[in-house]
Image (cartoon, rainbow, N blue to C red; front, side, top):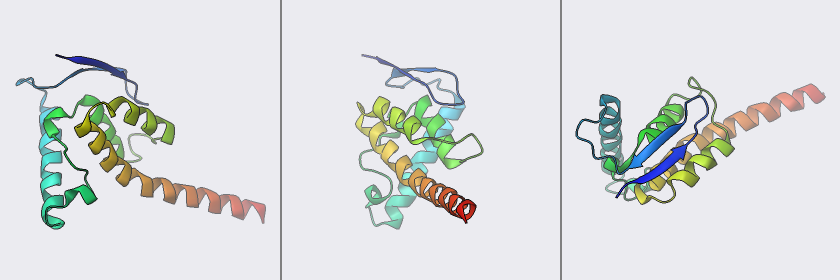
Length: 134
């Protein structure tokens, strides 16, 4: 059974997904993405003695990750070169993935990566605002 989802990511065309993605002829970018995430998860598990959930999230099956997850991963990993990610945009992404445990846990990993960036940006913006008031 396939579930259709539509997700709009800023700076990217509408993406229509069909889950699960188990196509043996999947694009090389999806295969590369899944291998990259599986490798990252393995490194996190070994670094934290099997407790990758501290930084990665529990129960992430990379086979369930989709094109929308790849697009958000690239935006977070390469931030801000592919454009800024607003909290609203990220919340919309998380709402789409909430129905799939693997994808939602992956989104939590992404949230852990983007949150410190947002804090730095907020502080820099606030600091600029304080300087303008003096």
